[in-house]
Image (cartoon, rainbow, N blue to C red; front, side, top):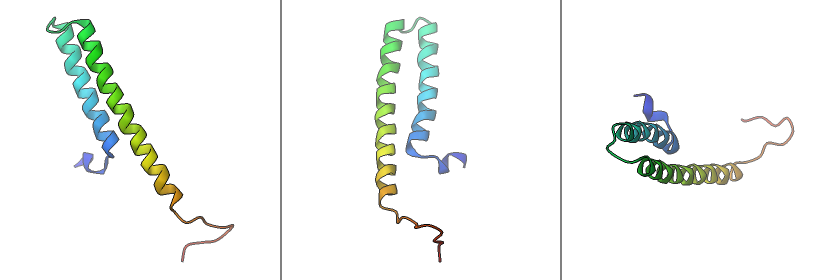
Length: 76
């Protein structure tokens, strides 16, 4: 399946898009107010940003632990 190789953030981003579509549809259909739609999307965006930051921090920590190559040094 295509989604198996995605990071947690990438999967969350795809779900975010689906949820935004649903919320916009509810707002357009007068099932929720524009303010409610805005607040829901704003809250989801905040969570998405936290996830992105956590994943970036984890990647940075992992990169710091990798050995550094000197000059023209090659892998064995």
